[in-house]
Image (cartoon, rainbow, N blue to C red; front, side, top):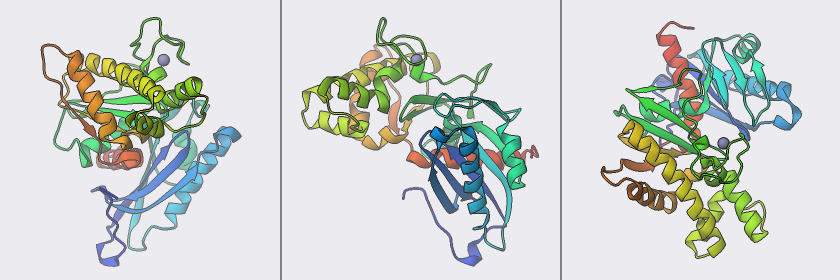
Amino acid sequence: MTGVRWRDDEEAVPRDLVIGVDVGGTTVKAALLDSAGLEYGRSERPTPRHLGTDAVIATIISAIVELQTRVPEAARLRAVGLVVPGVVEAQQGIAVYAANIGWRELPLRQIVAEAVGLPVVLDHDVRAAGLAELEWGAGRGLHEVLFVALGTGVAAAVITRGEAYAGATGRAGELGHLPVFPEGERCACGQRGCTETYASGAALSRRYSAASGISDLPAEDVISRAAAGDPVAQGIFSDAITALGRALVSYVLLMDPEVILIGGGMGASGTALLQPLSREVQGGLAWRPAPTITNGKFAGDAGRRGAGLLAWRALQESKL
Ligand SMILES: [Zn+2]
């Protein structure tokens, strides 16, 4: 896999490792990482969100415990980086709210730290993923980057001056809820015409199902059907590109990024997505060039890598 290097030989074992954990709505992904971002083991397990918050917490803890047992004898496990969706109060270590998991005001950092006996840093999944791309991936050496996680939902990491920007209340980067179609479809958030209502993976599947009667088709398949000439898929994909393009045009005009990186599950559609999206963004900008729009390097691994990166940063800044 691109960007992943495995080192099982004892000579190469580093002294210190951290565990990065990315809690998604579908999967809890964890990895053992050294300070250069090299991976020494990983685990994945389904997120049992239908069983409630306690079951999700138990899954997070068991993912960490599993990797604890795989730390080479010569190495020392220093900390855990834990990233979650929704609204996160990083300083206090509180998972404030996540619509797709269901917790509210949960002191997750303390709960996990006490359970695993390691210092824990808690942060936001997409901001962490963006930082991983900036430090170790496709955004290396850059300072002004928009990282867009295009998956079940649409979210973004605003990176400016080389740092992820969280905003006054931790809610910056909600690209998915920029209203792009006035009087458009109602979004789950309460607004109308949000980007996410048209351009998320869930939206592509839902809208394709409503128009064709074929349900549960993954977004990637809607995109490939569009490329193959299916007119229903083409209409829905075109709406997604228009919505996302408008959101990105607004971002470019406000923030002037060097590059826009597309990650998340739909990023795997590659040029079938990137080409029409780049055309749309350039078409929406009359007087200035569009920045390059390209894929992130780590695809679905960016979150756990970013979680590990934040653990390293906290260690280096003596915050743990
Ligand atoms: Zn919305």
